[in-house]
Amino acid sequence: MTLDNDLWFDPAKCLINGEWVAPASGQVLPLLNPSNGEQIGEIARGGQADVDAAIDAARAAFNGAWGRTPAAERGRILARLGRLVEARVDALGRLEALDVGKPLKQARADAVALARYCEFYGGAADKLMGETIPYLDGYTVYTLREPHGVTAHIVPWNYPMQIIGRSVGAALAAGNCCVLKPAEDACLTALAFADLAKEAGLPDGVLNVVPGLGAEAGAALSEHDGIDHISFTGSVATGSMIQAAAAKHVKPVTLELGGKSPQLVFDDADIGAALPFLVNAGIQNAGQTCSASSRILVQRGVYDEVVARMAERYAGLRVGPAMSDLDLGPLISAKQKGLVEGFLAQGADLETAAQGVLQDAPDGGNFVCPTLFSGVAAGHALARDEIFGPVQVAIPFDDEEEAVAIANSTDYGLVASVWTDQGARQMRLARAIRAGQVFINNYGAGGGVELPFGGIGKSGHGREKGFEALYGFTTLKTVAALHG
Ligand code: NAD
Image 1 (cartoon, protein in one colour):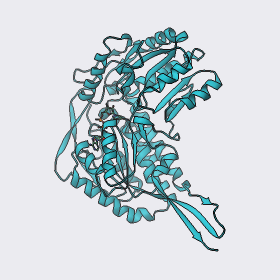
Image 2 (tube, rainbow, N blue to C red; image 1 turned 90 degrees about the horizontal axis):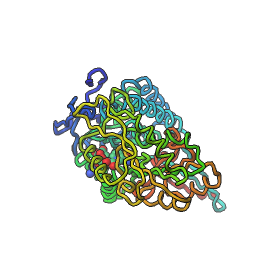
Image 3 (cartoon, protein in one colour; image 1 turned 90 degrees about the vertical axis):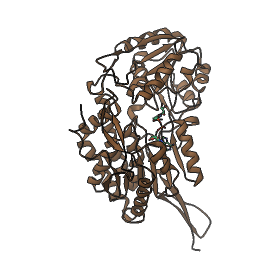
Image 4 (cartoon, rainbow, N blue to C red; image 1 turned 135 degrees about the vertical axis):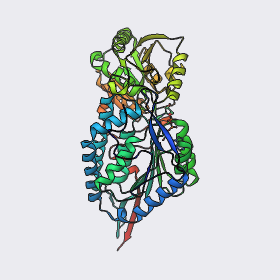
């Protein structure tokens, strides 16, 4: 499989001020296919000079045409962009599958989600309003929601299209101009999206893309005084550095840093209904999902049954190249594979309940078999640390109090789910669990473009998705007029 059939843009360029330009250094980085380890192309190695130019272009667009574009028109452009994405779902899906290694149908679903983000934020652009505030006699007080200005978007490799949709889509709808730094391991769909945005009529400079290494283009962007806000999704270590860089110039940041998300299964749960969610939420995108459910907490009365039925499903999981469109593809890189194998080695003392099966997996690919460990203590490294691979642990518990204590025992707090028919317990646990999203008798609610998403603790802060993201991409101004 090569790129040629699906590329309608040059992946070795940056998009700055509406022009495709080579990075100032003239340097490129290899583009690797995670399914076989082969180099399939080159991407731009952007750096400080490209970031400077992109920020200048974004600032000029913000002070110029985009700053004067009515909200309804911003919305129309986004809606048009969504339709262009929709028309290219197959090509975008193939690009993402090739670049990230995710099975084709999952990659295509990400492209559909990107279109939906454009549709949602296109529709929301002219519905973002301030308030009037009752105040002292003789005053009229109101608030204005204004864009930050130039927003920086540093995006990881696991769900490029979805994360660009929720982050750049909301920022544009709110009236910002964006500089996007996609991950060095997967930037093709970011470039494709930017090209489609041009076609949709987004003015030059409103969306700029500078691919490159985190320590170069990423650091140059996050340390720049010319940006007004940073939206980052990725690892805790990098997020912490970005927050420190932003602090130098007192810039606001939104951080989405992953998790160790639990599903709590009680004796009274409908286990048949829970099973697909219990497994899929752990192995989707080969476990490289910030909201992956890597901890399955099960009440003792149904513990053996749940583990046995999950194991049956694991035995049917097939792992292979992205284009074979099986249940799991490879991990993004040899480095990521090494990290996950390191975690698997730490599980050598645990009971392996089940594993999936490799199928026609080329030697050079970054494949790891999905693995379910059972009887794991809540304090074990595999039950505590984010693995970012297809590894789940099953942990038994006796009662509700213990379940909540285990659920809240990691540094993270992104997503959780509770499987029980008892209404009062559902309500109690929705409050007691520390997480940005709690699902009751489901997990993930089908992606939920409309649903505010983000974490607490080391999962980060700020919210993306839904209307809440629009608030995050604006700053609130209070206007108080004394008129007597
Ligand atoms: P990372 O956090 O290093 O990379 C994410 C993005 O940040 C990329 O675009 C990268 O180029 C950029 N970046 C890296 N260093 C930077 C710096 N100093 N300044 C500015 N930007 C920088 O993640 P990774 O190395 O690709 O993956 C490592 C781990 O991160 C994974 O094992 C996983 O645990 C976690 N991760 C989490 C998510 C998530 O959705 N929460 C996504 C990807 C990775």
